[in-house]
Image 1 (cartoon, rainbow, N blue to C red):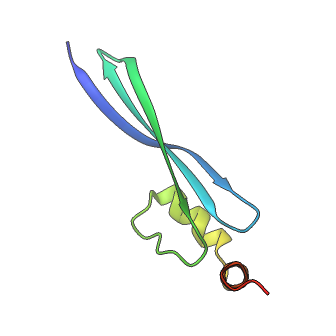
Image 2 (image 1 turned 135 degrees about the vertical axis):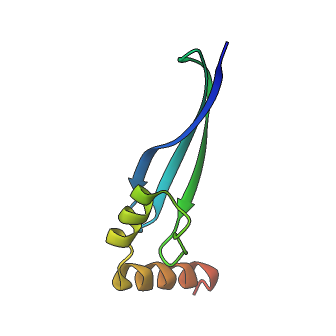
Length: 84
Protein backbone atom coordinates (compact mmCIF):
# COMPACT_ATOMS: atom_id res chain seq x y z
CA UNK A 1 0.00 0.00 0.00
CA UNK A 2 1.60 3.24 -1.19
CA UNK A 3 0.06 6.55 -0.15
CA UNK A 4 0.77 9.69 -2.14
CA UNK A 5 -0.20 13.30 -1.46
CA UNK A 6 -0.60 15.52 -4.54
CA UNK A 7 -1.22 19.27 -4.52
CA UNK A 8 -2.16 21.00 -7.76
CA UNK A 9 -3.59 24.34 -8.78
CA UNK A 10 -6.65 23.10 -10.62
CA UNK A 11 -8.59 26.29 -11.24
CA UNK A 12 -7.57 29.89 -11.97
CA UNK A 13 -10.30 32.48 -12.52
CA UNK A 14 -10.20 36.23 -13.12
CA UNK A 15 -13.08 38.31 -11.78
CA UNK A 16 -14.34 41.70 -12.92
CA UNK A 17 -12.09 43.82 -10.68
CA UNK A 18 -8.95 42.00 -11.87
CA UNK A 19 -8.60 39.73 -8.84
CA UNK A 20 -7.30 36.26 -9.61
CA UNK A 21 -9.02 33.44 -7.72
CA UNK A 22 -6.92 30.32 -7.22
CA UNK A 23 -8.19 26.87 -6.21
CA UNK A 24 -5.70 24.27 -5.01
CA UNK A 25 -6.66 20.61 -4.82
CA UNK A 26 -4.96 18.30 -2.34
CA UNK A 27 -5.53 14.64 -3.20
CA UNK A 28 -4.53 11.52 -1.32
CA UNK A 29 -3.96 8.50 -3.52
CA UNK A 30 -3.55 4.89 -2.51
CA UNK A 31 -1.83 2.76 -5.12
CA UNK A 32 -2.71 5.37 -7.76
CA UNK A 33 -6.41 5.56 -6.82
CA UNK A 34 -7.70 8.80 -5.30
CA UNK A 35 -9.22 8.07 -1.90
CA UNK A 36 -9.61 11.60 -0.57
CA UNK A 37 -9.42 15.20 -1.72
CA UNK A 38 -10.01 18.69 -0.43
CA UNK A 39 -9.89 22.19 -1.90
CA UNK A 40 -8.42 25.49 -0.74
CA UNK A 41 -9.14 28.84 -2.36
CA UNK A 42 -7.33 32.14 -2.12
CA UNK A 43 -7.38 35.41 -4.04
CA UNK A 44 -4.54 37.47 -5.49
CA UNK A 45 -5.76 41.05 -5.78
CA UNK A 46 -4.22 43.65 -8.11
CA UNK A 47 -1.11 45.03 -6.45
CA UNK A 48 -0.37 41.91 -4.36
CA UNK A 49 3.03 40.22 -4.53
CA UNK A 50 2.43 37.00 -6.47
CA UNK A 51 6.06 35.87 -6.80
CA UNK A 52 5.50 32.79 -4.58
CA UNK A 53 2.49 31.59 -6.59
CA UNK A 54 2.37 28.68 -9.04
CA UNK A 55 3.95 29.56 -12.40
CA UNK A 56 0.56 29.56 -14.17
CA UNK A 57 -0.89 31.91 -11.54
CA UNK A 58 2.13 34.20 -11.92
CA UNK A 59 1.60 34.30 -15.69
CA UNK A 60 -2.09 35.12 -15.27
CA UNK A 61 -1.37 37.87 -12.74
CA UNK A 62 1.38 39.34 -14.92
CA UNK A 63 -1.06 39.55 -17.82
CA UNK A 64 -4.03 40.85 -15.82
CA UNK A 65 -2.48 43.13 -13.18
CA UNK A 66 -1.50 46.02 -15.42
CA UNK A 67 -0.77 49.44 -13.94
CA UNK A 68 -4.27 50.60 -14.96
CA UNK A 69 -5.95 47.61 -13.30
CA UNK A 70 -3.95 48.06 -10.08
CA UNK A 71 -4.80 51.78 -9.98
CA UNK A 72 -8.50 51.12 -10.59
CA UNK A 73 -8.58 48.43 -7.90
CA UNK A 74 -6.87 50.69 -5.34
CA UNK A 75 -9.24 53.57 -6.20
CA UNK A 76 -12.27 51.30 -5.76
CA UNK A 77 -10.97 50.04 -2.41
CA UNK A 78 -10.32 53.61 -1.22
CA UNK A 79 -13.88 54.55 -2.18
CA UNK A 80 -15.26 51.61 -0.18
CA UNK A 81 -13.16 52.58 2.84
CA UNK A 82 -14.22 56.24 2.66
CA UNK A 83 -17.84 56.37 1.47
CA UNK A 84 -19.16 59.76 0.50
